[in-house]
Amino acid sequence: MKNRKTWIMTTALLLAVMLMAGAMGRAEPAGGPAAANPAPDIYERVAPAVVQVRNIAETWSPETGASTEVALYASGVYIEEGYVLTNWHVVYEADYLEVETPDGQTVRAKNVYTDDSVDLAVLELAAPLEGVTPVPLGDSQGVRPGEPAIVIGNPVLDDIVFPATVTTGIISGVNRSSDGLGYFSRAVPLIQLDAALNIGCNGGALLNMRGELVGLVTLMAGLVDDVVYQGLGFAIPAETIRRVAGDLIEHGAVRRPRMGVMVSDLDGPEEPIRTYPPCGLLVSEIDEDGPAGKAGMEMYDIIVEFDGVRVHSFNELSAILDTHEAGDVVHVKAYRCLDEEGYMTDNPKYVEFDIELGILD
Image (cartoon, rainbow, N blue to C red; front, side, top):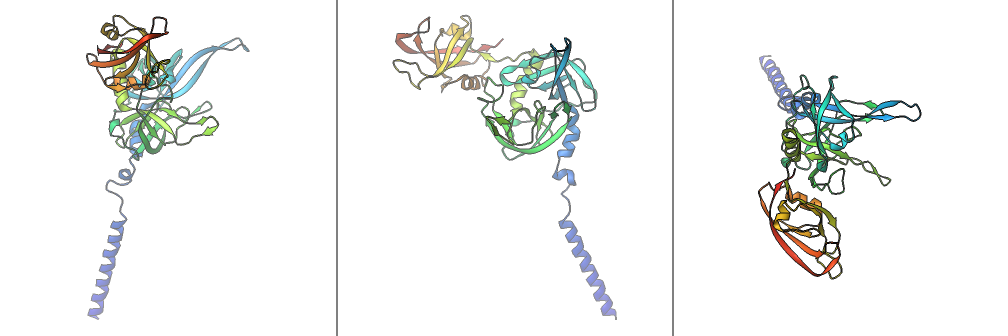
């Protein structure tokens, strides 16, 4: 009898140990569900700082003879006390701008600073947002394809706004060329993502798993030439934002290195031929007192090499130029083959300059 009782107790103990081991094997990761999916905590922390941006313009109706205000809706991110970051195309041609937080605070912008070349704008608010913590900038250079992506924005359906909507996906690519995309006239190494984006999400926040802003949503692919593209969106990286927004807030404009010329892309062969100059950047205007003018560059020179790199377009040149600072000396090679009226001359030649870069006013 004693042995039977001992056997029963031993068996019960073994079963208990097995059940405990099974439960431990099914245990949640350390830190509970939030450790496996940080998105809810990130949303609670960041969503109050993702605001609705309203571009309000006055128009006149020939039918009623009355003036009315029309609002376009998009998104913005509170990045510094009293300042909201959004896209340039979001604020374009506004009579005035206002932002609204998810909890209903509405504040007008008293100043707007823009850089249309990289589709960024900073709104200086008439008053700070109460109880809203700015979103910190992260390191976009460390972003890798395949990483999770969290987007918070304000999608719009007709005139219905769905504030502080969160979507998730992955980073689909990095360093995507901005050439031919969106509203860019300078080179920007875009981040590609597959999170669901809709009208109104422009200016929304692309976040990493620490809740840091690593990109600003700028473009989602939709219907192009009767072809529907899905899961294809782009964001301006934090490194571009840090440089541009910092200058806009501090100086009201971006302080870029400059050569003092206006250029336009020129198609042509890779090397010059008798009847046609090479492709490059045609100097259409030049400041004679600017860096390039002082170095000897002339109107109608065709820039073919900048800082040792063959350049074919302004996007290529601007990408190199933006890596420099005022005071840097760059070596520039140009092809001189056009006269003062823009006609081919009989004695074309390459000319080279050492140009000390200045500040773009």
